[in-house]
Image (cartoon, rainbow, N blue to C red; front, side, top):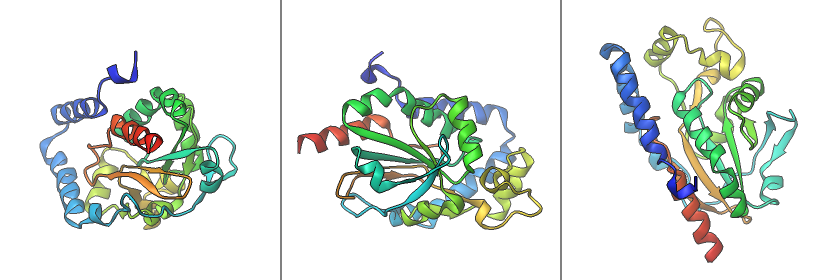
Length: 232
């Protein structure tokens, strides 16, 4: 199947939302809905790095090799597509990662390199890599420090923490190997789901981030941005 014939990512994500609304009690969903609205109302989307800005340099640990990987080394290989995701516990993130897995050849034909970054530990990234057969690097961003440089990091509020605990999602463990009882504020940090395209001069060519975790940058839009950059 060609990339053009693939189902749009957002259609796949919308089905997850529909299934969740059918299965989860409305009062529980209301907690997540309010947290999403509150996050949007902080104006975080307006503070993210935009097209034309200089991307921050970073060095993070790779899940496969357990070695540090720098953005400079990655950019030496071609245009860099950076996807920030929340964690392997999020079905929206997993669906997005698999969509990019299936488009990996399309990216390489365009001379681009894809990397995914999450605040989860390298061990959790390695699980993600193996379980979903991902052909691209997964990098660990402790406390969402690099996400912060891109303007997309935020801390999960108390009520939403209790909600995640009630549905047995242990974000402090996923992010830092901690329990709920000894969790630090840093272990509750997450990025907005986001994609940035960065060229060899560290200039951002494409940028999209969403406070609503159910909405993700459409891969087709990223591919079009890469095509425009090659034609410029």
